[in-house]
Image 1 (cartoon, rainbow, N blue to C red):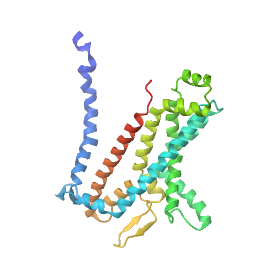
Image 2 (cartoon, rainbow, N blue to C red):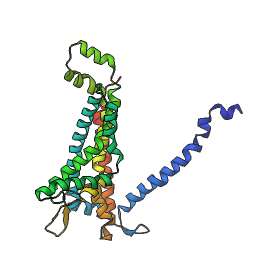
Image 3 (cartoon, rainbow, N blue to C red):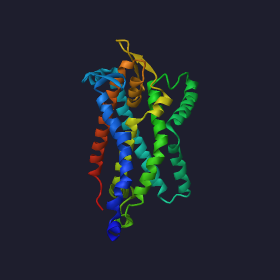
Image 4 (spheres, rainbow, N blue to C red):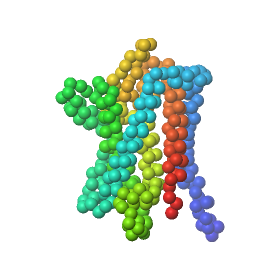
Amino acid sequence: MKGIFKNPIRRWGWLFLGPVTAAFCIGFVWPFIQGIYLSFCKFKLISKTSWAGFQNYAAALKDASFVHSFWYTALFAIVSLIFINVLGFAAAYALTQGIKGSNLYRTVFFMPNLIGGIVLGYIWSMIFDGILSRYGTSILLETKYGFWGLIILMCWQQIGYVMIIYIAGLQTVPEDMLEAAKIDGATKTQTLFRVTIPNVMPAITICTFLSLTNGFKLFDQNLALTAGQPFIIQPDGSTVKTTEMLALNIYNTFYGQNSASKGVGQAKAVLFFILVAGLGLLQLKFTRKREVQQ
């Protein structure tokens, strides 16, 4: 009996890990592998496929709408990353300075993150159109309005979320380091940039990673707010939606009227995964080098 209970985790761990591992393989690993395979095929139904090699990838890279969506999404991700993290950190820094009612402000700032993206998209669509209608235009008629509308929506939803992470990071800054900086005559600005921010780098790493990947993966807000509109007609007769981001472009390609494009849509999804994973890993490597070892 002693042998049974001597190391129960090692002996019975498989009983708990087995179902989780099986669910992970069935729900993620197998669909991921199947998706990569289908990106090399032409198909209407996944049960009836024909090998196409790299034709789908060539078609995806030649697709003007996909190329436009890539650069549009990249610009959106960079701009939203800057705004979300700067404003989120500023809010966190202000709320850790002993402001009266700080707990209430934290709750209010975090609440937009609890609302679904589709709901937020339609709410902000009505707000923007209500304002722009006074000037005889709409968020669906101008690319610049759609871009900044998405930026405002994303910031409003995500600032409170990253603020909570930054607050947790700010609360871990050693008090003795702050007191030493004060004794040495450092100003608040010098203390912020020389002491506080270096010690909050782990939180900055997490927040920039989340902001970057969320910016590239944005779908439901894009669908509800602009649906990619407006559009321009290319010389070859194809259309390019000027506010369509990568995730929405992949969705429209895969579920569009042309059923033969499903393989192209799957190839776009694989390229999208490689892009987001690569950028995320590069960002983590870049920011972790600047973390302070305590």
